[in-house]
Image 1: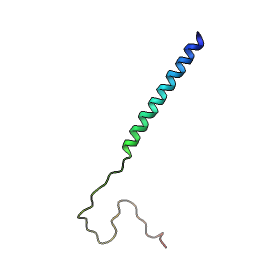
Image 2: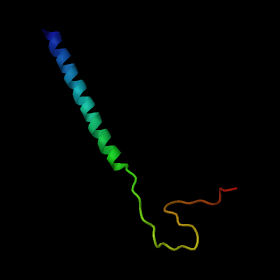
Image 3: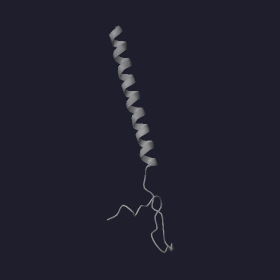
Image 4: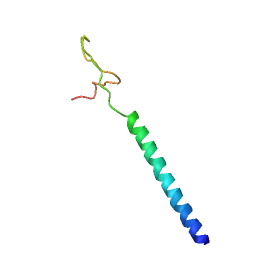
Length: 59
């Protein structure tokens, strides 16, 4: 009977771990969704870049 409680506890822990993995995976995939930004009406004289842009490594 002792092995039965260990077996049941193992499967309960396995189910809880899998459920936690699914919840965390769903939350992280929701945060990394791509959002489109309208750039209508933006006027620039050169390049419009958001972030680091390096031209000195081009050939």
